[in-house]
Amino acid sequence: MIQEPFAAGSSLIHRLDPRFRIVLVSAFSIVVAISNHIPALLSALAVSIVLAAMARLNLKEVLKRLRVVFWFLLLIWVVLPLTFEGNSLYRVGPFTITEPGVLLSIRITIKSTTILLALMAMILTMTIVTTGHALNLLHLPEKIVHLLLMTYRYIFVIEQEYQRLLTAIKIRGFRSDTSIHSYRTFAYLIGMLFVRASTRAQRVHHAMLCRGFRGRFYTLARFKPSVRNWVFSILMAGVTAGLIVMEINSYG
Amino acid sequence: MDKNGVIIQLEKVCFAYHGGNNVIDELDLTFHQGDRLGIIAPNGSGKTTLFHIIMGLLKPCSGKIEIFGRPVQKEKDFHSVRRRIGLLFQDADDQLFSPTVLEDVAFGPLNIGKSKEEAISISRRILDFLGLSGFEDRVTFKLSGGEKRFVSLAAVLAMEPAVLLLDEPTAGLDGHTKAKLIEVLTGLDLPYIVISHEYDFITAVTGQIYTIENGKIFLDEELHVHQHEHVHRMGKQPHKHI
Ligand SMILES: Nc1ncnc2c1ncn2[C@@H]1O[C@H](COP(=O)(O)OP(=O)(O)OP(=O)(O)O)[C@@H](O)[C@H]1O
Ligand SMILES: [Mg+2]
Image (cartoon, each protein chain N blue to C red):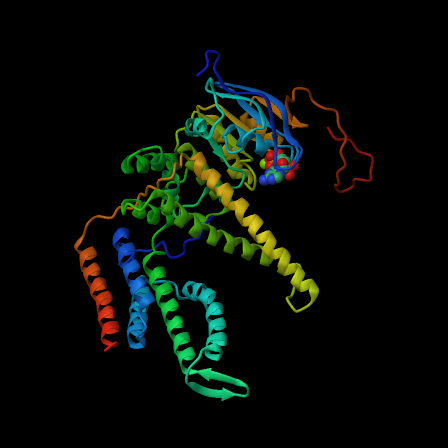
């Protein structure tokens, strides 16, 4: 089963038309991804935080998801400042920390956090089925909709299986250290993870087939056209445009 | 449907999982309109596999399958089979994937082309029928094991099937819930095949009991004289079981 802790809710964002949300958050994410001006990126981060607060996301669940990128960012902070060419900021023994390296790391950190938060607030607040339905309505090719949704689903299935396996080895007294036994256990764990996640996903797919699933998603959710949609969309589009302006101004 | 009321007919069906031995081996099965059939067989004997073959989720390597009098072979042939035969999965967690109960139950009706209103009214009716009114907005992954079982049964019934295949519906249910399930099943006007490990339950809801042995299915008519070991208090004293 797939847990969607953010999908249940009745905040302003939950009640917005999913099509609007998808389009707005896509535009916002693209702009953030290609911006370089740090004040613009910080403003975008602030916007994301506001969105997350508006969606009344559970802070603990949000942090749990941010932790995933945290490891990736840590790697970037270890590698980039040391390996990038440019003005040196500090020298620590044989290592030089360069200014462009640090700036790049800062950008990547802000960008990934901003985009992730925005997606959590705008997309994870609808169910998978609703997302699929909205993408169908936006005339995305069925194959792509399928691919997106299934990938998204499998990620959670894998995460869930990982937690189960972890519990299974923990209750049998496993503690990770640097011994061969520990490494071997982790290797088994990862192997099992993929096997189990794929069979589980297959069973879920079978169950969907048994209930007449033929590739199209339908939803009970009702999204009436409302003023709220437009007000929110205009605000959000304005914010996105503002970010573009900030970015362009920074060039000259 | 067939003239003689045959709903499911398997002829010399074989199936093996990739690289394994035949789990199902030249199995013949005829299931008629109005039949209520139970299967009791050991773990790993191929019960779940048999159900999945009937639903077209697993493709047999040889043999013939006819359902509602029509031979079925390709994925496309099974589309109508799946509309008319409802399979309750052994693990309810595989079956429920929508966040709320109502959405999950309505998933099937929406897929087969019902309108939103129809899907909602069917789902509510079935939830009511199973004593689950008030569960509509409950989050599926927060239900107890027994509640999940009933919600997945509701999801299956919402497709308005003509036949039910129930894979261990009593697993994890307490006595009270089991009694409720017996009441529901016997009250339905549907033919079904039930897999269970519980003799009492099977005899309460079905007329004939089959077993699977060496990949084939047999009517388990006679009482078998058998020996088994068991433990209980005072077991060392000579005693009799009746
Ligand atoms: N996906 C699979 N891949 C390979 N072998 C499998 C797979 N699923 C089941 N089997 C094997 O096929 C045999 C029959 O499995 P099946 O699940 O049909 O048994 P069952 O009668 O339903 O058992 P249970 O009472 O435990 O549910 C078992 O020996 C099992 O190990
Ligand atoms: Mg089974």
